[in-house]
Each structure stands twice: as C-alpha cells, then as structure tokens.
Length: 81
Image 1 (tube, one colour):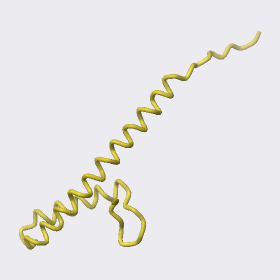
Image 2 (cartoon, one colour):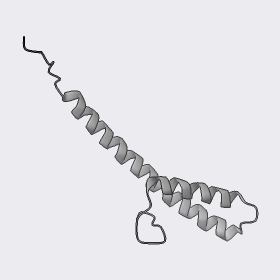
Image 3 (cartoon, one colour):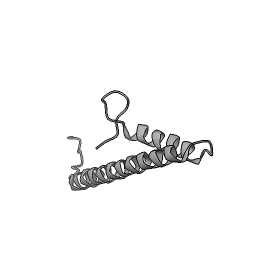
C-alpha cells in the first residue's frame, strides 16, 4: 500500500525519497531509541520497495513511448515550386 502524507494524498516519488533521507538520518542518530530505529527502518524498507516499483513502472512506460517514437515514419516536407 503506498505511503501517505498526514492527509489522505499518496506521497509523490520525490516525497518518498525525501522521507527515506529523513529516515536514514534518524536511524543513524545515536540518540534514536532502538525500537524507534527498527520501526523507522521497517517504514524505510516499505518506501524503498514502493520507489523501486515506481521506477520499474516508469521504465516500462518509457520503453513503450520509445518504441512508439521509433515506429513513427517521418515524411520529409518538400516545398512545392
């Protein structure tokens, strides 16, 4: 299930990356209690999985678009005399 912001809107890819950075900082902080660090790590794994799935979907879309673009036949424009 995609991660969501405090509202009901799903997080964008960029927001997920930002959240992963925040999680990494907090997990690396020696002041973060172990139980909190484990919970954060668990959330980070879920977000990283979602990012990977998004990247694969974007890659598939780009491949389809590239194939469609490669199939276009460009007809040269000739000026009539």
